[in-house]
Image (cartoon, rainbow, N blue to C red; front, side, top):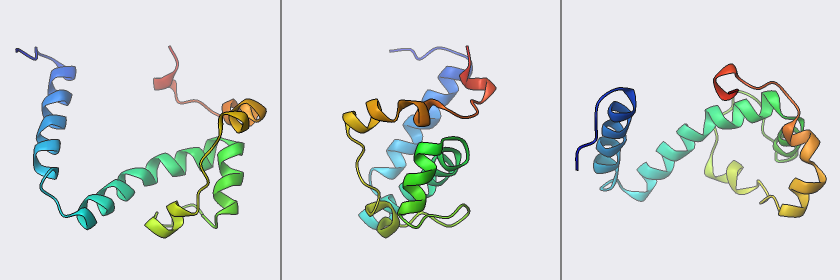
Length: 101
């Protein structure tokens, strides 16, 4: 199957290479990598969404600190009901131009 050309094709090839390399990682290495990738998402949520900021602060998170398995393990799972009840605080906040169409 041909992937094609252009930016999307390059991204798919890079992802395929990353998956091929990471499939043999030790579980500790995989977790460390995943937590590193999670940090920008958590910082964005903290900085732009009041709902997530409050939840992260309640778990002891502060901007700039590394995300550890222990820290992440204290984050409660969000229920559908919580999303429905707090949609304004989840939706409220700055949205990056790249995400607006």
